[in-house]
Amino acid sequence: MDTLFTMKSLSQYAQVWQQIQEGLPLSEDEEIVAGVMKEHPEFDTFWLAGETALHPQEIDGFVVNPMIHAGLHVIGEKQVLELNPEETASTLQALVNQGVTRHEAMHKIIGIWGDLYFKSIRGGASMYEWEYITLLNSLCRSN
Picture (spheres, helix red, strand yellow):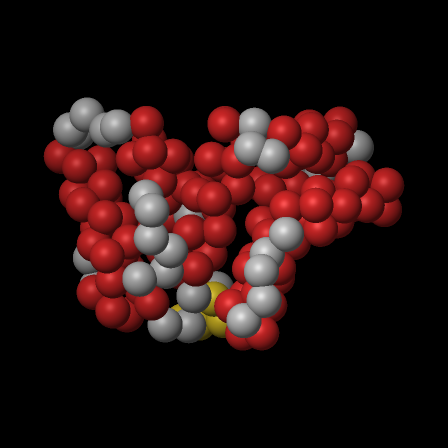
């Protein structure tokens, strides 16, 4: 999935959702998306709802953008799987070892990545891997 938070990626997510429902085989990238979808059943109604999933929604008392939330999870899971950067996987493991659930640990990790990503988009600046790695390392120490 090369595009983030766009109609194209939403279309890809809808396709994965349909494949899950029909029990069709999934590619490695689609398996990652499917895993995120299964972790977030509260988003189920949004995958085939078109642009609605691209906008903030009130779900279980929280305002969340299903597409951005799921997209950040997919990014984090790919980083762990591909060890790119390898600190993502080691941070995840360290947080889990400290008693944080895997899902909440991933939220902490993708929160950092998302903050850096959106700061770079809004400010027109580059997103630096070293900054991300530094923040991941500090996350392990602060928990």
